[in-house]
Length: 152
Length: 152
DNA sequence: AACAATTATATTTTGTACAATTGAATTTTA
DNA sequence: TAAAATTCAATTGTACAAAATATAATTGTT
Image (cartoon, rainbow over all chains, first blue to last red; front, side):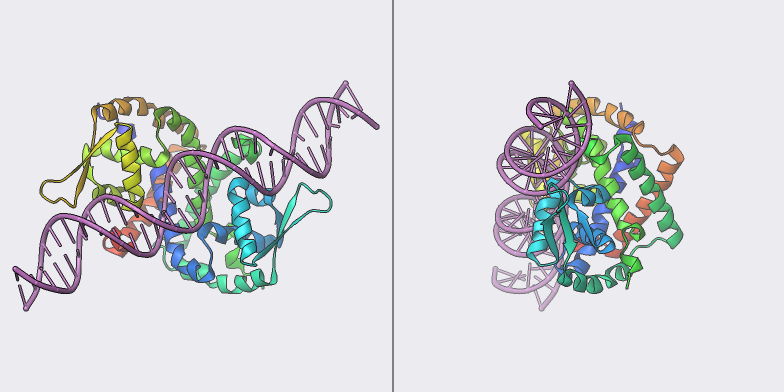
């Protein structure tokens, strides 16, 4: 038996996994000077866009759970980039907001996507196409679960 | 300033990162019964296809380096799925080959891709398209570096 | 043959991920 | 309104992965 379906070149998961790691690796030299890991970078992207978010909202937007976010956010707080405080309306909720230092970092971070843009050997059209397909996977998964927290 | 280029929806990296984690997560319940993690699974895929490979070859095929592979292969060896032995010609090289137990596992693993196939809400055509775009990213990266080991 | 450079793997450290609990706050229901 | 159920975040524990660095074997050069 040669199990055609087990061949690496017939997998969709593998190029997804590999490409993701390749891209993350490409970000590293750009993010190191900012003192951010890639995951911390996307957390900051989400926060810069919305000013402040609860841990739960962050998790929903980024598909990360509290077990990953809590220690990560504490590190960002330790670096002075974000402030963490309980909501007055609902004390179960922890609000994360960008500090002045965090906003200063945004200006430095602004050049990261520009530097990355030239790195990928695919056209803008292909990029949009790829993005669309990936979003389709993500959204279909979001629907399937109803709420992302129900995933596990 | 609103830094359009920093918005999450304008990133290509993020859906790649998120979709990759979502897929890996979907594999977990299928791989748990086999006693494999996702990374171990793709290592076994590569080995099943080639029978035996050096650590270096594995890394090249899967874009993984020895820091990831060495402990992973030791675990697979501990489970009795692979055998590790130094090459006689060049003792720097470590040859990894599938054991009888490893070949038995292949038969169980054969149903994994079939079970996954129905899970993704994208058509076969879209899958191929996606695969092609991802391979393009990977290959352009391979060329850029000359050899993958030069990446760092 | 001696030395430097290269190659291949291993080790260490840090970061990320998931699962299972806990505890507190809130909402629902009886 | 009291009790039960739900929600949210934190915590704990374990496992995995990635990068940097170290070590050992080989090759090339003079």
